[in-house]
Length: 227
Image (cartoon, rainbow, N blue to C red; front, side):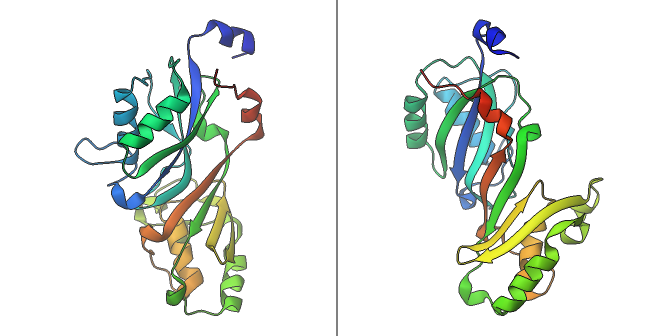
């Protein structure tokens, strides 16, 4: 869609940057009888008059109890009111889920196709770390690269057709830092176990944070001011 056709359209695309405390949600996707991240967003947004015709897309789908410092939702909507007022009202009504900012862009985009990479941090408690810094950094290098990562996923992940993933892992005071184009189920938690213990286990979800969704540069050519 070009700018001229956009001017004739009543719809806009909305990139909705959110953060959440994973402990306060059963899961990410909608579940009719459970409190979920996407379900809570839909419930509150629609109660405030923010509606859309199609579903809500996400930059990253996190497992149960996983936290997000920043994730991105996307909808196409006819919403015309102040986004600042909407964010303020939303955040006052929500427990565990906050909207950080909203950017207006083109409608009818496919958000997953616009993701360049995803960043995660595993904040394992320092008192639980028994391996030396040398061993940790060595294992980070060994696990970094582009290869078949199916050894570091669960049974559900092993059934996926695409096993070749690119990942870079590093360690700092903040925690174990992962950057990749995409991740298999439980991959970060299993790799964190290997780095910190030398054993392949599924580490607890409560220490895992989705830090950032990096969008492709061309997305930012079509960001519009909220008037």
